[in-house]
Length: 149
Image (cartoon, helix red, strand yellow):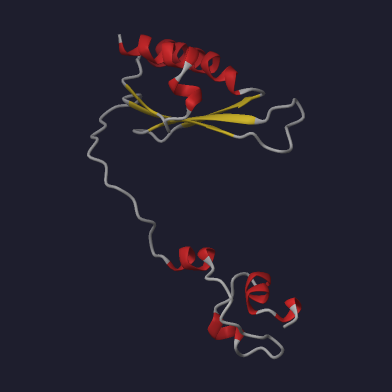
């Protein structure tokens, strides 16, 4: 079997076309070795599974979601390879900060905390993290323990 005629190859090339449609095309060989396409299965789902939250948020900055993304292969023009996202659960307001190194996250979080206090006269009540090591160890851990006090 020639790889150019493979069903899974044409399935991907045609934007994950359904098998029922590919059967109408000539020259495509079907095999029992073709893998199940996870992307196609996910696209057919009417909603992704998620757990229902029992958290009742009634005001801004009661719950803040924090995550660091990266590193990316191609940095920005100022050599930023990571970005930090902060999302307020109540308002869904989102702040994104570009970082050159993950270690800069604690400084950004401290500045953000000061910003919230100065601009909104609020304090962060609860912070939800993805349990990444950059948040659970070192200076970030110390910063979050000060927030609890």
